[in-house]
Image 1 (spheres, helix red, strand yellow):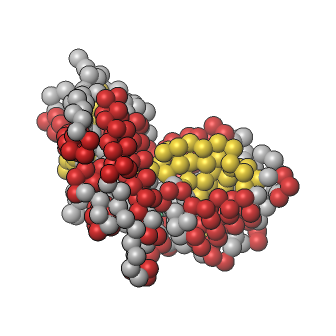
Image 2 (tube, protein in one colour; image 1 turned 90 degrees about the horizontal axis):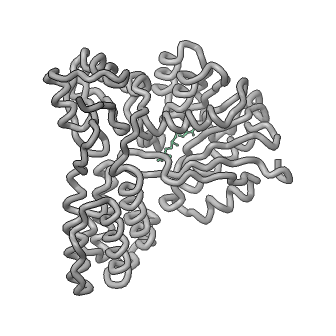
Length: 389
Ligand SMILES: C[S@@+](CC[C@H](N)C(=O)[O-])C[C@H]1O[C@@H](n2cnc3c(N)ncnc32)[C@H](O)[C@@H]1O
């Protein structure tokens, strides 16, 4: 009998009503409607049992929520990507790349297609009024870098991710979280990313450390207290719904304060944390005040740490981010590339595709190259430079 486990990309949300739970494999874009007892069934799989013969489980397996040894099927969009990359290379260079049937061959094909794309098909810059378009449209080469970077990251890390360590308890805790609010620039990461961030922080920090979370739509504060009793965790968050949710889920195991970071951190929270973690806004101004709050709340000590999530390639201005870090004396000790995953929703996908098409990028393979399911961000471990502490 084949061993089974939960997909690392499993998530659960309400469906059309609060009676309906949608269990989704975010990597494949496949979903199954569940009932109350589906939780129990998935929990059993997480505990190593195989519910062979259960009809709902059979559907969960068909939707890749549950994985088995020896499975090799790739998400749908990969087949289209492979076909269009080969056709593109052939059309533009006359070469006939062989069909790619392994992940390594797919990587090679992508590398070749990228060279050909950059030689023959780069979109031109937008020269119309600036107020209608974001910074990425003005610098289409950044969109192209993003497109190839994210496709490559998916192939490298997610296409054949067979991790078997999903903390299903977090998926259960998180599933009735408040809806994402764009007005607070929310864009929360997938449950396993929250799990891995919290695990890494627990590994790095001494028992008894005080940790501050600045803005917590990713629910890292909650994951930290679920994983250990050894840390003292506080959260500052602007979204009142999120604050209520976090308080209800935490049974007082950590402190959550509704607070606008534009006013800085409260005086009582300055210079007193061993670690701060945050995933700041992508606009220059938002990034700056989040970093200032992080710096203000950290103890001015050598082993104080900032665990910072962002993706420089999608920031309003990456140069400003690097100079802000430098200005504030925040020194990067380690970078975990493509550590965080967020759903790449169709609104963003269509915006990116429309911008690239408008600027002259070819329909194929641009459409297929924007087919990846996740936005990625890096995870930076930072310390305070002693001269600027
Ligand atoms: C800023 S969002 C970042 C989202 C993510 N980095 C992105 O844009 O892809 C992170 C958290 O900060 C909270 N937040 C936003 N503005 C805030 C403010 N002025 N003060 C406190 N929290 C804030 C949001 O509600 C959310 O929970």
